[in-house]
Image (cartoon, rainbow, N blue to C red; front, side, top):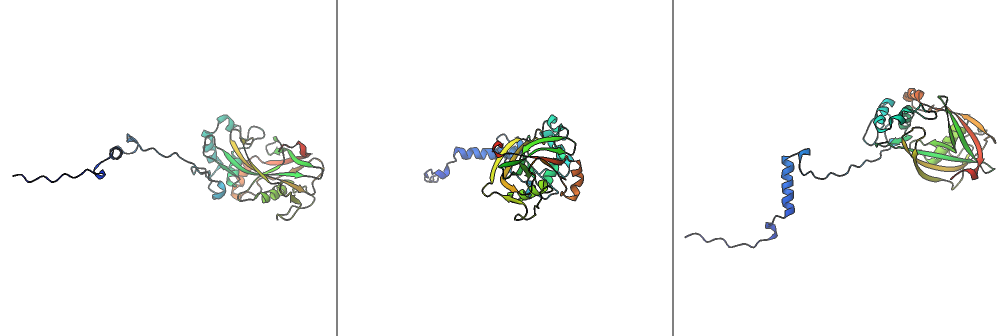
Length: 281
């Protein structure tokens, strides 16, 4: 006589394999049998995100973009830029009057004044301090044009402006900008201390805004300018038009001097007083 059959057990949820579980099991087997790109059901990948890394936080001898490209020389920067920019635009750098060359951009990166995004085209980001120098006649000092080292000149028609240094505050940048571009003609002195010299920042005049436009210095390269502007009174300036001279890149690192010699530099600044009412905000 056959032994009795065991009693039937009720079916519970733990005995049931759901369709999603079956699918995931099959998917795992497929990816095991067909690894890497040959997997017929690849898992969706997350979109790639690029974090903006400012060159201000990097060692000066290694300059990086989002993908850690190293620009150890202007040549390496040039090779990186060529496939990312219009060939006609890039070829005009340092050739078209009023433009700068790749040595200038390399120095900006090396000194931490500029960061550049790994995109097509790349985007250059610059922190700029703008000083609206005002006088007792309600006039604003405007830089009308610059004379460059290659013999060309370029129109400016804007207040005193200067690229900011790494970790520099807008207030410190104001004193440095006045000292470097106007200091030689001021009858008084512009001291290194923020509380000394002939410069007085007008309280409550600070403003910050962001502008995006194509760079005039580097045709074809879009730029994002973070503008920090203040009004200031500078004692000892001439009443009429005047000119100042500048030795640009004089304070750059010694091992970058040869690169500075290849860059297009500003030799002279031409200044004029205009009515404050004629200046666009």
